[in-house]
Length: 188
Image 1 (tube, rainbow, N blue to C red):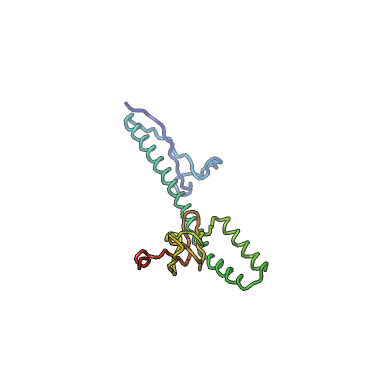
Image 2 (image 1 turned 90 degrees about the horizontal axis):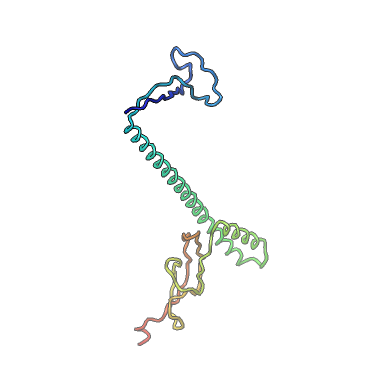
């Protein structure tokens, strides 16, 4: 069984490009397309169902593509933000060094505080290190020594602060670690 349908064929070319065509009338609704002819098309019922299935598949495929592109664009934006914050970390370090030689309450302190507040509002977090248990995911040990008073490796000093952006570590903290005395040395 066949169904007869009329399909509108549009021409997006300019009328001057079509041989023997007169100037088209201005169409306010769709200025870039004009109707050339209505052509009857015969479509079989099975073919119509197949075409509708293909159309549904293409719509779903395009929707998945659009969502994937949006996710990728968001990831690109996050990576760009992380790179920018990583570039600002040495500035924070230099502010800290400069403040070691400035009196309390100087203008540098105010500027540093404003910079830290701005970076925190973007999601930057300092990694807590001093006095915590050593964790190689968050701390980079540059020196270690044994200490009889502790039972687990502990951070005793911080040389450079570490920072995170959300769950991502931008820079681990550079620390000095005190570790417990090894058992064989304690017995000797």
